[in-house]
Image 1: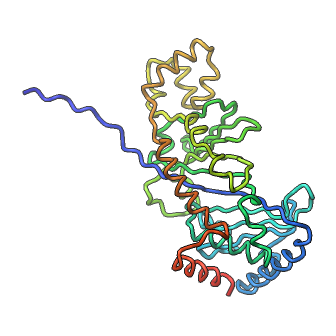
Image 2 (image 1 turned 30 degrees about the vertical axis):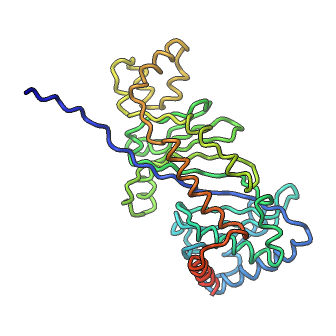
Image 3 (image 1 turned 120 degrees about the vertical axis):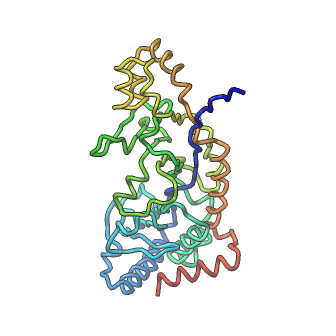
Length: 340
């Protein structure tokens, strides 16, 4: 009996999704400003004393704010070597705007992945800073989400893929010293969505981090929802951006069906600028031929499932959310360890 020749399978795709960075602002009444500053100065003094530093090494005026400091969440941070904090969960806090047009408090949560305990500790920092009025301020309808970076981590390396972002008018490719692409940017001026694709492997190598989690490339959506935290889940429509991300096997740029010019342009500049270069008739022809190389490692259903978990963790940022007793005790111990 004649055996059929086996068809080689494409490698299985692994996907990991989560919030890589979350930025928000809080407006507070002017009569609370003095109390907030006083509480903040106490924290700065405590951290400076603990780490044997001066107060201006913990916080200094910049970026239009009087106070700029990074507070630890579930891990201790270095206040002298910022490179050592890469990837660690942290709360970057800016307080007392120099311009009245800016909110009095701006904060940024980062350090992928963030866990429920990290959000809880961030809330506790805010409660300490705001003092007795914290419950009136830390509310879903008073915290405005200005930016969220959603990480989609893939197991395949960036040089095995071609990535495009539909309706993006600008794109940029950065190569390493060996001529291998390491970072891709896609953007449309003034819109909510921007896309950055970069090599996690190269990033870990640069910062001397362990490279053993099986993920090699990050497709990061940078979204500016500008909505209240209470509306954030409804505003973040996965379908709006997932359908715009197109990923193709790198073999696409070696297909002899395309002209040498098209293949060379794809390799050097990527799919998006190559298509923009072509006349409409030729562009439609190339797009039809591209379909057989299209892969879908970022599935909308998987992303929705992962983001549901992210929103559950995010609930710990609000005072009305009750953490499980053991988790709360553990988080409180971590917080106290940062202050003593």
